[in-house]
Length: 606
Image 1 (cartoon, helix red, strand yellow):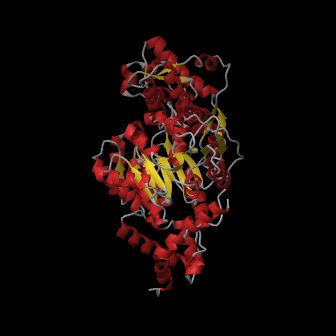
Image 2 (spheres, one colour; image 1 turned 90 degrees about the horizontal axis):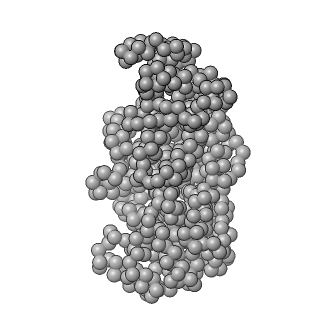
Image 3 (cartoon, one colour; image 1 turned 30 degrees about the horizontal axis):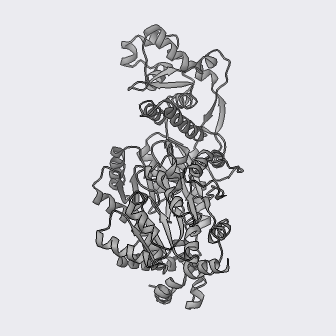
């Protein structure tokens, strides 16, 4: 491992491996196959990059992220690594140049899009080169019923079939035990050594708030907790993306839209701005984000309910890759549950497929409705144990659990009476109006004010009743039917109506959001504050980095991460030798930028 440690220090500028890295690297350097499950920001890429630099030959990396390959290669080249890629964005002359360098052994790493491995010409190219390893990044894309399934990944077993002498390492940040098994089977990794790190990201604070006015709630969240920070806001539809981005811009937030319906040039330009500029908020569908290596994303917000815990964890993992405090914030409400249930009922595929989708949604709803630590529930979903974190909303402001059996019986009875007496079905809003005794035109027109349940719910507010309906839907005690989202009973409803089943419910404590936000802000300040004298130095370094990145046409983090600049600002090295001991300053970057940094540090302050 002395050579690997030397590469870590000389190329990447770090003195020590992170937890779990050394064992993986040692195994792959020795020629072993590996399947690595490690959280986003845990240092997965070093687990194949260092073995590729130590072993003889070129490391071939299969990545689904064509739009980001240039940035991945730029980041490696900035470290002095001979890296390139082959994908459909290149013209024939450029591809021939890369292929010639590859077969001549003039590259350290070559990135390939998975669809290229369906071409016989690509397979013949691989046969002609000395290859040190195959790395299969984002390996969960092979899971056929997963949230990021890519059909081209199903053909990747061809790598081992044609080159059984070359070690393989498959890596992902998101895998349940079932997905883990599917990756193993589909990539023929049964004999590989499996490395499963903790999925915990303790620097991310998970918060889920009741959805009231989501646009306004988001704006308040950004203004009070993340002013000027880079972040991602996820929406379910393209129309929502456009509306939210425009709303944020109108309110002084630098926001950009991203979805598959945008012109490709606009989409690429928006992604480039997000990666290269500070403080951009990207409002996007889930088409955006996989492989985004921007380390200073301070928050990920969801304005619509994700379809699965895997998707949610993958998306929130794009925050805080630099290890500094970050927030995963979601606004969640009744309509989210109705909408997702309808999407499942109308989805393509057989009954088994719809059951799988429903199972994913049930786990996501359980996470939203839990009164226990959210982090322990997320980790349990991935088959890992954890103690309460003290840093999620349910830990900081524990919600109350109350006996909602009678309230549930009132809702279910209203659905029963509407069906039996009037042969009618209605949505949640009308049910709540009946319980509250509101004489709306619809209620009067249908004589629903004559129902025995009319007005029996005066003990709860409109918002509280909607919460009851939401939790009944989440637990499968109510179901959604038809295009209009009308409510119907399920097989499980009868036991509640007969009093044979208790229904404990979650009640949001008063001022949860405010208390939690204050605690979050204080926690971030304590963890991220620089010494007062170092703050202006840090800002000067950031300004220098921004100008340098713009000049080179690369993201700022390719020059240096915030964490490296913070250490430089705090330590104020006075020589190249002292600067070389800062984490993240390897030999190549020291030679390129060392004197410039010393000049910034020595420049007189205004």
